[in-house]
Length: 422
Image (cartoon, rainbow, N blue to C red; front, top):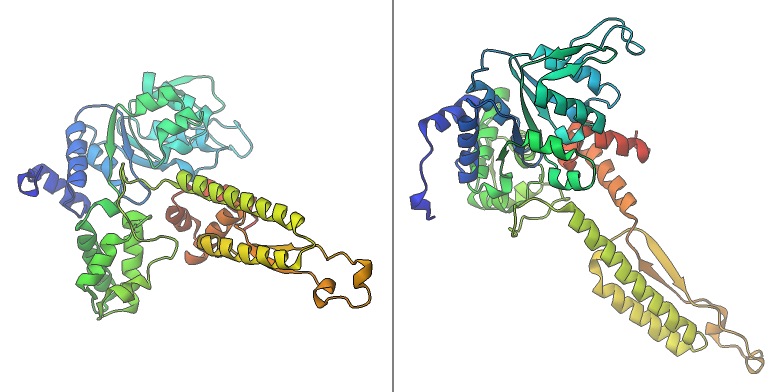
């Protein structure tokens, strides 16, 4: 379809965008808003998918506002921020004495939101036992409080959201297949920021204007090359990251016209410029890990070959020198690997002393040749370093660091404890 053939958004879509502060005219974004409005009056479960920071939280609000439940309660729950041991109590409530610290009975979110809508953000983080309880609510509207034997009923609409590939999670046994099909009766996909074209420029100007007005500082302006740099940046944190960057620029460059070179100084080094690829545009971290492992194995094979040559030529000083020259060539061919900090020192065995050489030994016979071969660290070390830097950039704010790394807060807490980064 040519741009001139694109259908203009309906008045209802424009009204919803204005009401909920959704900025942008990308066709995929407009289609998502249209889909949310159309499904709102029909009491079905909805699954909102998209990358972290892309704005998924607006769509459950649209669905609730345009549904017959709009005058009842709307409750948003971040499933990834609730500890596994207490999530059943938070969702379904508990009776007095059900566990240590349960000094009184308590209503859960499903009871509190009876007649309304509950938004389960990061639903993929729910434990399997909680998933079974949620499935029962979706199928029959029934639940049981923790520590109780009485079945209770609730009339509730569930809208869930996730940045996880649930099909893969089902295949790996981390998410119930029956629950997936119950939740995804209707799916709404939110496009990543990098695929929204000119929306990036509109959002940047909106964030800069809001910052200047709120803090009463001179507004910044962005040059054309800065706009181009923003459009070609990958934005792994999506709209949330763009707002963070623009607010930094608006503070430190107040009143200035910001060019591409200045803007790049505020963009994190962990993300390269975005290059469009086939597919849905989602960043494939699993593929990156596989590529890194392949690189490690390939380098190990080369080192094994070098060791075999070293064993064969250990008595030949000229051959030994040729081997190290060859090692330098290999390292030159692996520029990416050479940037890693971990090093392996390959040393040649000391040359054997022969009877004819004892009187006038060659200078090289009394030393060991060595060459530093740079190796990539383990995947765990890479992960630990990424987490440490993300925490530093966000001044220790774990929620912000988790958003930047595109993982749940629960996963970040576990990794921090695992790597001793407290």
